[in-house]
Image 1 (cartoon, rainbow, N blue to C red):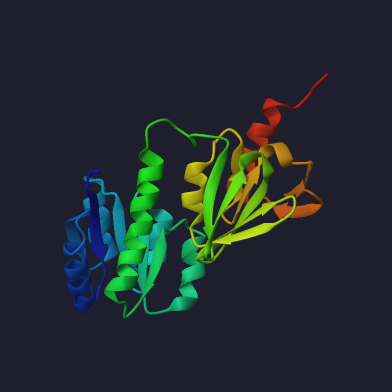
Image 2: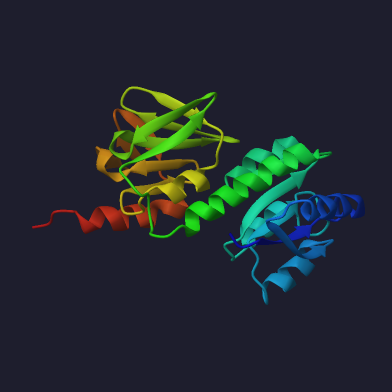
Length: 237
């Protein structure tokens, strides 16, 4: 595997130094720059692409979350923050993981391994899964799930709940990681927190999707995509 190019965006010199030292200890990471504010990082990203961004949340003028909301690149993001209350908002923006300051090397390694796993799934040969099922690690078990059995998945902070007809599987992964393993023609996002199996949709009423009697919200950002897919199969006179 090629090395993952990365940058560090943090206004604290000590934090930048620690992250730099940690990056240097990971063979598959290649540091391309360190920036003390979001504006300098944005200027760099206009001319360069990177695979991974270590992004602080609390920064002057432009916060990490504001920067992330305006970001127009496909880089993976690991948030670094001393404020855990912001983590959930970060997950709604499809981050890979977050590191709570002060973080240990062991926790850093866990986060970057998630980034590596996601990158490899996204760039493996052949789009989509290799078969009709996936394996998901839940607690101390590895669960096999047939794609046709999945109703929907819900992002819950640092975890994703996968719902089937008869069970709920809670796994330590991100929605991004799960989405990368599923065929895009069959599974669509209707909300930052919800990914649904198109074949399981029973009805669409207003801004909600009905699946197995459960009502799931369609966010404004995803409504056009949902209706585009529906209209492709909508019967007309």
